[in-house]
Length: 219
Image 1 (cartoon, rainbow, N blue to C red):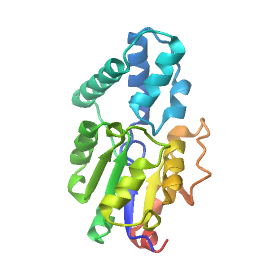
Image 2: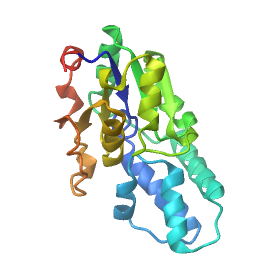
Image 3: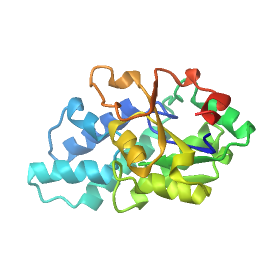
Image 4: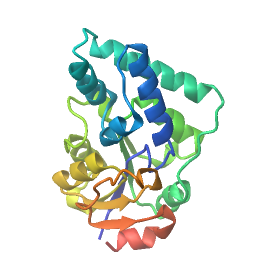
């Protein structure tokens, strides 16, 4: 039986994949690096540092990674504060609140920066539901490195195999399985034409509305 649940954020709680790709492309263009949306998709679930390190290296431009990453975060903050509507993934908030009501410990393990994590969790009224909130941007390596999921389980006080992880990206699924978690993959329709490889997951759902607290507890 699962004793705790660990959520990814982007694409699982926040319907944010499209605007993240838009902002990444805008940032690259500001620094004279050309890219298409399809080039960004494989980096879903990974940190901005990992993304820009690869693109800057390929461009052979002399750009400080810390600078370009900071610019992306600035643009993201401006987008969030612009008043443009950002919605939660269907069923995500209801599932979080149901799990919390059932007294199932929850953790958030996202590759986003902490300010964005806190902004979205508070915006959707679920910040207090999470006893552990981790940002992969504060770790040496991002997903698919399992460190963030290992830390989440440790801080929750459970073994990794006692924690169910909900992910929507290949890198996140791989990270969860490497950590020893039970992984539920959300087949995010955003990746419909991109063939995100979620095959390593233990279970797959097409909607978070398919999940319930009782069902997860019995996994």
